[in-house]
Amino acid sequence: MERTDANLESLGRRVREALAAEDSAGDMVRRGRAVFLEEVSRRNAVTTERRSPRRLGRWLSLFFAASVGACAAGVWFWMRPVTFQVGEARPGQLGDVVESPAGVATPLRFSEGSQLLLHEGGRLRVLTLESTTARILVEDGVLDANIVHRKDGKTRWSFEAGPYRVAVTGTRFQMAYYAADQSFSLSTEEGQVVVSGGCQKSPKVVSVGERIDLSCAPTEVPAWPRPLLDERPSSNATADNPLSPTRAARGEPLWRELLASGRLSEALHAAERGNFQRVCQIATARELLALADAARLFGPSSRAVAALRVLRQRFPGSMESGTAAFTLGRIAFEREHAYDEAGRWFGTYLREQPTGPLMGDSFGRLMEARLRSGDSAGARTQAQQYLHRFPEGPYAAEARGILSR
Image (cartoon, rainbow, N blue to C red; front, side):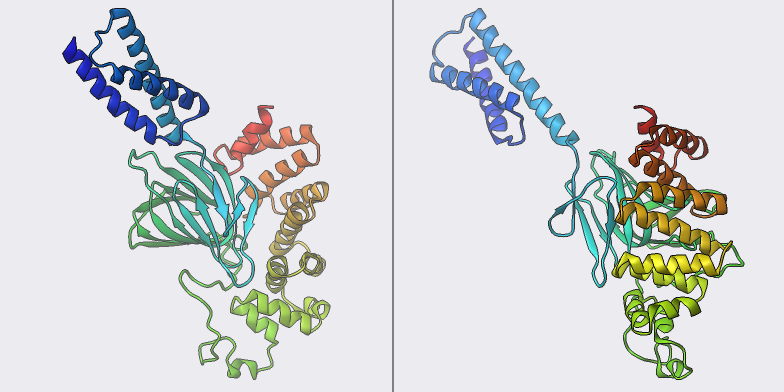
């Protein structure tokens, strides 16, 4: 019995030290732990006293209860919800649009250690977030990702951008996606990812040091010039710079040159100085889309709405006109919270571009707009249609949630 007592006391001392170091236990675990520690202390004070079978059974019961509590606390520690922070202090909310303002990049930090960096002008949403999995919808722009790899191998993050899906198990990579022409680029710095969807016939594994460039834009529609990954526009006027004195001497407007170089914020200010309404009357359809993006990201949304409405008046039936309808829906939904109007614009896009590159996103957003406007029946109908056409799409979870109500 004395040897058994010594073994129990040694085991109790180790358990007591482990429990005392556990700070994340809940109230129930802490109360059980306090009772257990009190009993262990009392028992250690009378180590020479012989234990009766009944008292020994009670001691072992307390030990078992505390062990179960410690195990529950450990499970809670590993399965606790993951949170994230936008910028330096703003708590992140699932589904909210995260957008980088002019001149800065926006970091997103996750409580389990993963980090994202959204470059200037980019937009994304965190759709779902759990202890080992996450779904990120990249709507536009460049994103750096550093995903923490769990030792148990259960890390499952996915990034969705238009028709593309990036499956991640723990790695570092940079991706760029532009909705206007559905161009997509990704380069991997560590680990590997799997890129599927889009115009690919089969998924593509992108390992460390590799890069993939894809585009689903129709061949007859040239892609709008975009900076490549790791490229930044220079402010120096050189022979290769679009703002060089040689090109400026040809009489091309400054706002047009700035748009061509991807400097949207500066292009918007130049267009405003040169009479914004007049600029909208001479700009091409793609330039009007770019001006609207500049105003939406870096200026008043009223400027963006004005440019998009002019585009639809001057270029009816074009692909750019359909994109303008989709963007007007985004502005109504995100900036003005006018969900009925947003639904009408998303529906307009689907009528005008039923097989367009933004068709899937328009389906999902129309579903959300109808739900938020109070049209539950319309939201359910849209959710059913979405799941029928896109059973694994980025809005599939939201659609199932609507149908489960």
